[in-house]
Image 1 (spheres, rainbow, N blue to C red):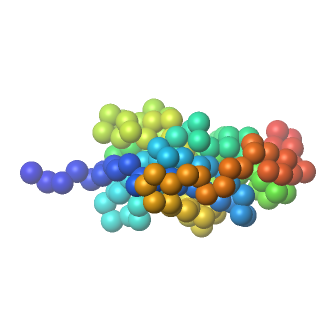
Image 2: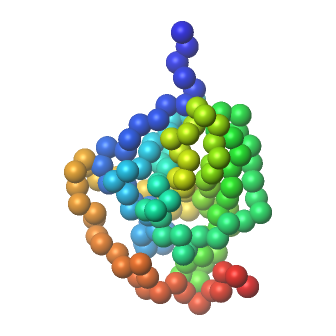
Length: 138
């Protein structure tokens, strides 16, 4: 029997995603996906992501192992990073653990992992500071 191509694991503790030093995700329920020879990817439950900083784009892609991905642009601190995050909103059955989760490209966010059982590194209000001078709908 061959090993599965997708290997899922619960992140061992709290995981945060920081964009320009600001927290945009913080979760004790993140999922780490190891896929073939690619670097591991952290998927955050959507409810643990600051969705006010993200806007869906028209970009999409297809993975034969996970399904169709939707992409998001980060709008934060007068910066716009196109297609910096993605989500498999209706993944194929073998990837169902990442449904309603969002992942970020590591070149755009810093991922911090804390030991199991750790409290959040810092508790950030929903708007710390209020999202900058960009109207994401314009």
